[in-house]
Length: 415
Image (cartoon, rainbow, N blue to C red):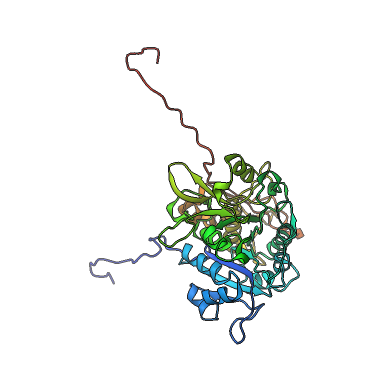
């Protein structure tokens, strides 16, 4: 029976490019802090969507003042920098060192990262030592910083093997003020760890106990505000450490307790070369921006010499693995005459790999060139693992720009 003439409607879907929410702005924070009876316990993970969540467990500005610690401060600064971020907090006793807090066999950072099963993309660590603590300086900082850098890298490596990827930002406490004597962090083999020695002088000068602090909460908040491919020192007003209206970084300094005006351009060049994250000024731009997105590893022959390099590859790994994971233990047809993979099977896997990273290209986190390749000549029947190769072209960062400028005379024919 022929249907009557009519107009058929086919409602399509998926055309708006909407994607599932990601966890790019989920961060972790590990702080040493006095426990609060009946409210906040050391070693327990607390989820936070605003500083009000800290207040609900007794962590307030008054708590900081009463205990001469910077706990609420770091949390509050984090959310001032990015009100839309998610933060997971775990605290340790004040007797715990930075190294203790990131010990791969310990009860703090490892517990935090396991609790969220890979959702935490970057973790900040800061110390609030008990009254009377005297740092033992080594290489220009509290020696605890350097042992913490190594421990944090070991924890990263351990977590990476479990498909959980979180880099680390370590508070660079008690900088001794001498750039020339500073340890070259770039000489370390800790690609997934960074150290900040930035300090807000308004905080440093507010209590003798805060003199050696570094602004981990501010830097972590700006990091959470970045796209995975962005340098957290980009001259975007949203990344400006200074906010005079809120009284933030009206005067910037270092964890030495000295303002930036105490340091020469040569000093800052040295600190930058040595891989520290500190407040920097750029002529023509108001305020202070983070010097660069350094990690504690060499630049030469290293594809992952900056925080954004690591963030980009970690997101690509997560997305591609998630997309291809359904193939694990699945049936894959082979050519019955050769035993090798069928061309259509290879093509399907390649399409899956390419699609998994397409969103990153749309978001501007990749330049393009996404290419997934599956060699058909693989002997899966003999138990060989399926080999899938994925490459892409990252975005670049303009760390140095040269402008050629001069006069032009239209009557000068030699020009």
